[in-house]
Image (cartoon, rainbow, N blue to C red):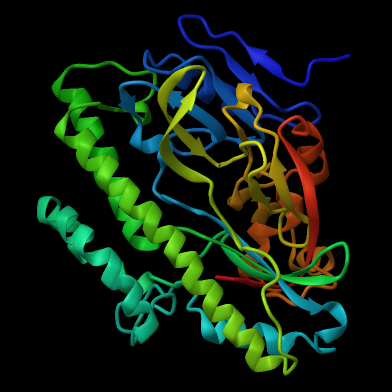
Length: 407
């Protein structure tokens, strides 16, 4: 029987264990992984998920355990980005024949996208922040004030006005059907503008620390903060706050989407299972191989034994609700999606609007030139990705979107 993983033995570094059988992996991503594995504080090995691809700062689809230090660029600037899904009591037969009104209601309920003009409000932020959002912000604000007292430039980031909003890129809101034709609501977003600002501030501070102490690195994006230092403690506090913001952001959006669906579909419905709300860009303390370590998941999801998670496909492809198997070698992790096979620029060069329309047949969604970079063909085959991680998770539900809202 063939081993389920490939292993790269890194000279002067830790091994890189890859759950990538049957899926493509760029050579550039392998080199990036090897550079990270050379960092002296990496614990045991780096685990690589089947959606792995080259990233800024660190390889997307990697799990990096560390002792005594943390790499801010490995966590990245979309701190706490993740997924949320909720199963409803509705079935496919309860949906209207035309889903355009449902998509329109969701788009009106949740700010999404981004405006680049200085003269008008950013369409991806709240103009008048709703009372429900302000109540959530009230719980976040005291710790945010503690952060900005030390890092005043973060005060002018988008924070309160981005809470409960979607964003751009691969962030989305979907209405899906599972294998039994039950209706699900699923969404993908993170800590928005404030998380981006926090990430960038501490990435730059880490780089300055490396310069101050004359530390040479395989790549400048591997700049790190040492446990016990002021910047380390401040970063841990700020990143934890951004991850809380991200989780609450998804909860607020889910509430808005449910209200929008109820406004369009007259039939009363309930949520039939506890919503799954999981990060896939984050860092937290965990216990592995008998030791407390910091685990950075850059495009990876926690998959402890029995733990539910979400692995979305691309726009037009299937998604999965999964249950973790608690595989210790993966640091109890799984992939966070399909994983890109090409850059957004390359996707726009290679594919046409006609390709996008054909690839999203049966999905009520945007079909225009600005979303070609999200075309399914720019991503790995989600079925191959799932097969490669059969030792990490089991599939509980298979979802197919019928409505997709993108920024």
